[in-house]
Structure formats: C-alpha cells, structure tokens
Length: 523
Ligand code: NAD
Image (cartoon, rainbow, N blue to C red; front, side, top):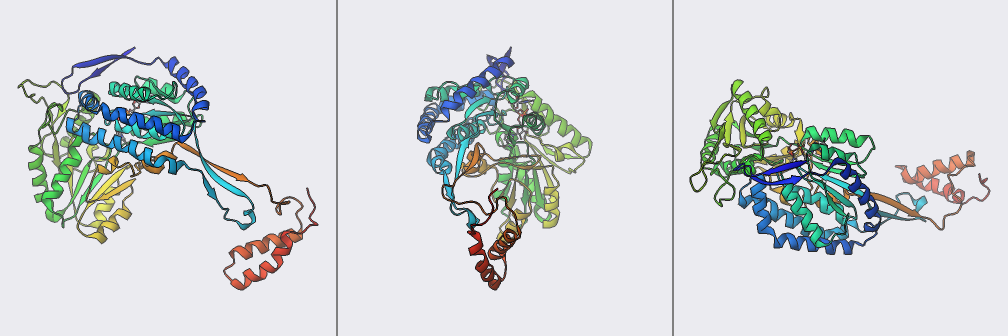
C-alpha cells in the first residue's frame, strides 16, 4: 500500500511512499529485540559519539530539512528554523552534555540504620525496544526528544511518524543511519493508524506516544493488555490569563503569536484567552487589529506568518467548531472561514488555509470552548477576579500548559500554584516547549509522563535498585519469633521515631545488646 505526501499549501503530491506491511512491523520488532542485547551493552560514551554525529548531520542538512518541513507540514519557513531546527539541535546539545551525569549509577545509603552494612546502588537500565509514535504538527522536534532520550539510555527505537509527515520521518531515519547507529537499533515503520496499532501490539517494551487524546486512550488500552509502560503526550486547551495591570500592546502581541504560530497547530498554543474586564475591550481591539495584519500564504515565502492547516481532517474539525459556536451566538470579530490566498506570482493557493480568527461571546456550551481546536482560532473571554478565572481555567478537561500575565508577583505566584496543568508560565507562553531543560507533559486528559530534561531520560529507563550484602550476620527479623524479639522490634521503633529524647535513650539501652543476641533460633 502507498500513502501520498501532500504539500498542504498547494495540494501538490510531494511523493508516494510505500507503507510498512503490518507483518513486517512484527519482524522489525523481533529483530530489534535481538539487536537490543548487543546495543544495551555499549557504553554511554559510544552512544554519545553516535549522537554527536547525528547532531552534526542535522546541522549540516538544516536548510534542506527546514524546507522539507515547510513543504510537507506547511509552517512558515522561519518557524521551521525557530520552532523545529533550533530546539531540536538544543535537545541534542542537552543530551550530549548531560546524559552521562543523569544516567550515572548512584550510591545510596539506606534510610534504616539496620541496613547500613549493605552497599546500595541505583542503576538506570534501558527498557528494551521503545515505540515512538508521533503526530504531524512538529514532525522533527516532537519525535526527536523521545528518540534520543531512548537511544542514549541504551534502548532500541521503532519510530512511527505521522502519515501526514512521513517524508520528514524518513529524513530523520536517514540522519541516524548515516551517523552510524547499527542496523536494527533505530528503525522506522511508515503508514496510517493500522501500522501504529501493529507496532503497539508487536514485541516492544515501552510506548512514547504524542498525539490526540482519542488515540492515546486506544493506545493505553492496547498497552494495558501486556502490560507495558506508556508515556502519553496528548491534547491541550491552554488558557492565557491576562490581568488588567499589563501593557496591553505588548501582551496582545503575545496572544496573537501564542494562538496563531504554526497556524495554531501547537499542543501548547493559546487556545483560550481570559482577559480581566477593565481592559477587555481595549485588549480585544488590539488583538483584532494585529490579527488582520498577519500575512497568510505559502510558508516558503519568508514574510508569510500563517501557513495552511496541515490536513483536511484537521481543517474540518476547525470548521465544525466555528459553525457550532456561531449557531450558539458567538461573535466572529475577524476571520472565521477557509480562504485561498495568492502566492507571490498572484496565483491562488488551493491548500487548506483558514483565516486567523478572533471570537467573543463564547460559552461552555460550545465545542470550541471544551474541545481542542488545534487551529488559528482565538476565543476571548471576560473575567472579573482571580477566583473566577481560576475556576474557568481549571474547568477544562485538559491540563497541558497555561500562562498568566500580570505585573503583580504575589498574584502570579498564587495563580501558578492553583492552576492544574503540566506547566504554567508567567508573562510568557508556548516557548518552554523549545527549552530542553523544561520537562513537558500534562495532567488530566493531556496525558502523563514527561519529555525533555532529565525526566524525559528517566522516562526511558528501568530505575533498578541493587543491594549488596557480604557482611551482615543472621538477620534480626527472620523467623524464630518470640517475646524477646517483639520487645527488640518495639525498642527499635521507639529508638528511631519517638518524639521524646528520653524514650529514645532508654530504648537504646535495651536495643543494642538484643540486636546481637546469639541464642535466637535459626529457622
Ligand atoms: P493522532 O492521534 O491522530 O495521530 C498521532 C499518531 O498516532 C499518528 O502517527 C497516527 O498514525 C498514529 N495512530 C493513529 N491511530 C493509532 C492507533 N490505533 N494505534 C497506534 N497509533 C495510531 O494525532 P494527530 O492528529 O497526528 O496530532 C494532533 C494531536 O497531537 C493534537 O491533539 C495535539 O494536541 C497532540 N499533540 C500533543 C503534544 C504534547 O506534547 N502533548 C504535542 C504535539 C501534538
């Protein structure tokens, strides 16, 4: 079977790609299991050397890759560099500089003094074969994070790119191959949901999934049959909360960028803007004015700010939500429909463009307010005070990220503590996803587990506790229970945990001789 890679701006077919037959997915996973034994025995320095080579190839090919991202995904070329190439190189840097330290075995002294004769360690072992299943919205950045965290920890990887961005997936595969990762260590399977499902059911030991909440639920069910661990990076409905003490001009620019960068197809984009009543009208006016000035078109033109929606399925979701909102009384202030912008030669583009849309008079009966839109649509809602806006923001089924805009540091801290989400930014939005040291992930229907930072690497390992004891004599707590042992255990509890110093000292007088009594029967 073949799938078509399509340029969403022009609808031109970029390539026809053979999909991986489902039976082959199982074969690839079996081979990866065999290869894993050898690969997991490599040293971290050997793996980091390959990672450095992959980083250098990505750097060398950055122009070709940025262009491919714009062609296949649709985003403006500037964003292909700023929101894909840039943070992806930084993820490599982070792993190259920090993975050795993060994965270094640790010596731990037991909490309980009775165990102090033991030598205890924590080792971070690879899990085995990791499936990385990705969406289309950031086709380079999103898969690379779990791929390199998994590889550097000694896992093998089977990567399933989105059916809408398979060419970029294949380019990632080429990079790792050219870098010299041995056969079977980094693998790719190409295709639709059925290929993803086959991968989930194949011989794998962990799934790192980024995509919709709907697919995440199916994946978790299937993974539960084995069971194997899953990391789910799912949808979001991120609120931007704007208080009336802000610089309206500055913050309205942020709202427009946060909602419309990558045509709103960012998991941590601003999906709803809550604005305090005193500045509501002025703020909305500025947002509308700035939105109308955005340049829509083919992302290959360097001054284009809004590219197409990546695919028709996503465009239809956006259209359905707008229709539903209008039918329930919402007011469109700008945008609201599909358009066919002209390219620089004056020719109409046939792709999946949707006007950046600002919308007010919305309420929770509308799909737009409850479900993820994942498009260039910004509903703006008025609020009175802190309590009201926290309740509004936390009423969402999702909890991926949020932003708070105010000059009042104490208020910012109060709100940050009360928002239920994986991250909250003050006077900033979206960009933390590009920071390799910021753990990213969600709560509620936005999923669980983390990518990026040391937590993304720990997500890919078995945290193994190893304890060595070559010196302890017969253990006090073994069988041979009697009254005297009961008293000894009680004394140990009092000695360690009694709030009274006198009681502790008293217990120690009885405890010490009893700890080493010889006459206990050995069973
Ligand atoms: P999707 O769930 O439709 O597809 C994601 C991937 O899963 C694709 O590769 C697809 O082929 C595969 N797939 C589909 N059905 C499958 C099945 N039954 N078993 C295994 N794999 C299957 O998502 P999408 O439309 O590609 O991406 C958009 C979604 O991704 C949005 O909801 C967005 O919020 C989310 N997202 C989340 C994050 C995050 O970090 N939380 C980041 C980016 C995107």
